Amino acid sequence: MPDTYQTLLFFHILGAFLILAGAGAGTAAGIAMTRTNRVQTIGTLAQIGHTAERYANIPGGILTFVFGTWLVNEGGWDFGALWISLAYLIWFVAMGLGTGVLARFNKRVHARADELTAEGIEESDELAAMASARTGPITGNILHILTLAILYLMIAKPDIS
Picture 1: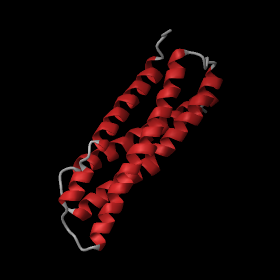
Picture 2: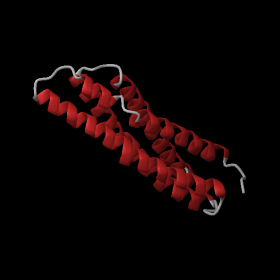
Picture 3: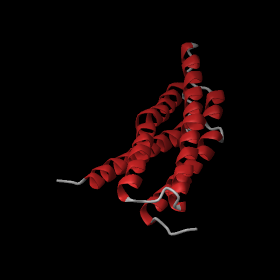
Picture 4: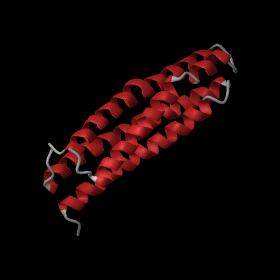
């Protein structure tokens, strides 16, 4: 029977896997979205990115935060340790970028695709340009770097001052 620490660690890692799954789905949809001008396709891919944020990244972020905090208490870690403080800082920045920038970007693209579909437009260079805006790849790449940084901190637990 697993002890409390192992149970907390399981849910913390489950949250990390949800984040990685959402990032993978969102990245694949984002890349595919930039390679077409078909309105319905772009709309669907933008919706996939938004759905990945809502149903994988946000729940994963909540799980990692709640169970990670509980792990710090249960494992006797010091909240003042730099690697823990950095992980919290990066987590907040990543959640802000994911929900405040990337999810909103996907929602705007999806909404515009819905408008164009309602007008009967099947292909749109305007929508393709909107979907290919730098906001998506820049924010996505920053989030990938932040995710790798958190993974490094969680795995290595470096003794940094």
